[in-house]
Each structure stands twice: as structure tokens, then as C-alpha cells.
Length: 280
Ligand SMILES: Nc1ncnc2c1ncn2[C@@H]1O[C@H](COP(=O)(O)OP(=O)(O)OP(=O)(O)O)[C@@H](O)[C@H]1O
Ligand SMILES: CC(C)(CO)[C@@H](O)C(=O)[O-]
Ligand code: BAL
View 1 (cartoon, rainbow, N blue to C red):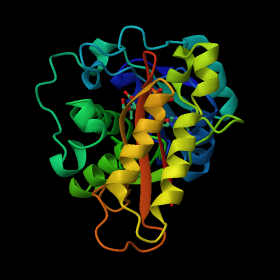
View 2: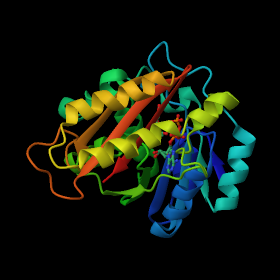
View 3: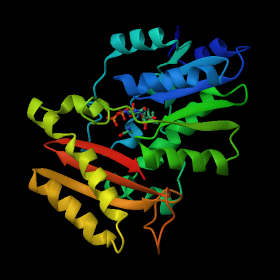
């Protein structure tokens, strides 16, 4: 596996290697990331991953400084999974001057849910992903794989690729879970043992919300409030638990078609903020 820290080194490592299949990450890799790498590998001629903790997508009070950085273990996992080129720029390699040009996604999609509770988050994500794409796909077309766990992020990136006519196929990877059902996430490492045992309740709450939502005469706002109250009673601080249309993340209107909805949730357990979702 070739490790490139600079854009110039990345481009020379990729020159003449064909179409990249790309998996961007913030490192501290777990089996969810590695599943994306394995899924991406046959989708291109050269498998590229990136590790970059992107300051632009963190609010000042968030965990940019404490975000887990596990460089040696990450390299070993990527190499074992068949990654050909790892792009790991330092901050000044990717942002040699202040990034004043930014990608501003559609507020209808990006200022709700995650974007409401993390203002500016999707500007930071879209900007860095556009820049990573410019670095990795300099030679032309390819494929990039993103996890469904970050459901809204996947939708924002898809819309960005479509509206900018980027020659990049955006492919979704399923959410990998621990045995108890907790979605794997780098931030799970912040949980105490007691919190870790409790953490699966977020996905259970989404399952219960989804089941209740399909009952005849279900009143979604009431069910959503009840789902949040049930988590609050267990010691969580929910940001949202909600049922939305998969197509646009807006609230469903009328009687939705089967298989068009998604339950999404974000909640804090102690100081750890977790997200999850369930299509139904
Ligand atoms: N459990 C998972 N299964 C599949 N893909 C995942 C999973 N968790 C994260 N991903 C995907 O991996 C890519 C990189 O995500 P990231 O490095 O932020 O990991 P993360 O575990 O989600 O971290 P965080 O805890 O910071 O949200 C994203 O496309 C994300 O959706
Ligand atoms: C896509 C991404 C690598 C951009 O920093 C990040 O948001 C992530 O890891 O999901
Ligand atoms: N997993 C998406 C990146 C973030 O939470 O900052």
C-alpha cells in the first residue's frame, strides 16, 4: 500500500492506474469502514482510501481535538483489506490557505436533522469531499463508497455529485453493527462500559418507532415525541427521532408507499453523540 501525504504524491501514485474506487474516512477504522473498502475494491482499478479529520465540519465545541487518531492500526487494517493507495494529507497539505471557497448544499436537504443540530456540518463535509474528489479523481471518472449509517451525508453527497455532473458513481454501503445491534462508529469508543450496554437502545427506539409508524391511523408527531421521551427517561438527551421520506428527508404526507420511509435518530448518551437510521 502506497501512503501519500501530499496531493502531488497522490496524483503521481494514481497516474496510469485506471479508475479509482474511493472510500473517504476520518480514521479510527472499524469493521464498517473495512466493509466499505472491500465493497469498493472490485468497483475500480485502484482502491484508494483517505484518512483526514476535517476541522471544517466540526463546531468549536465539538470533538475535533479529541477525535480518536489510531494511525498504525488503521494502516494495518487498510493494507489487509486490499487498499492500494492511502491518502493521508496533513491539514496544510489539503488546506494550504484558508478554504474561503466552500460548497453550500441545498438548505432544504442540509439544514435539517444533522445540519440543524450541527450548523455548517454539511458545508464542511461537502467542501472536503469535493476537494478529496478533485485530488483522487484528477485523471477522470470513478466510484466512491459512503456508508448508509450517515444517511443524510450520503444524500447530500449524491446530490452534489449529480448537480455538479461529477463523473463519479456514488455507491452506498450497508451499516455494520455490533452483535447487540449497535451501529459501529468511531465515537462508540467514547462510551463507558455502562453506556456501551445502553447504547443499543437508540437502534431499538428506531425499530419501535418504525413499527408503530406503519400502524393504521398512526400519528407521527405523537409517536416521535413518545420515542424521544422514552429515551430521555433512560438518561439520553435526544436531538431527534423522526420518520421521513427516503427521497428527500421531508415528513411523509398522506399514506406513504411501502418501502419509502426511513426512521432517523441522533441522541447524546453522556457526552457521546450517536446517530442511526432504519429504512422501512
Ligand atoms: N457502521 C458502519 N457501517 C458502514 N459504514 C460506516 C459505518 N460507520 C461509518 N461508516 C461510513 O464510513 C465512512 C467514514 O465515516 P467516519 O470515518 O466518520 O466513521 P464513523 O464511525 O461514522 O465515525 P463517527 O463516529 O465520527 O461518526 C462514512 O461513509 C460512513 O458512513
Ligand atoms: C465523508 C467524510 C470523510 C468527510 O470528512 C466524513 O464526514 C466521514 O467520515 O463520514
Ligand atoms: N461520520 C460523519 C462525520 C462526523 O460525524 O463528523
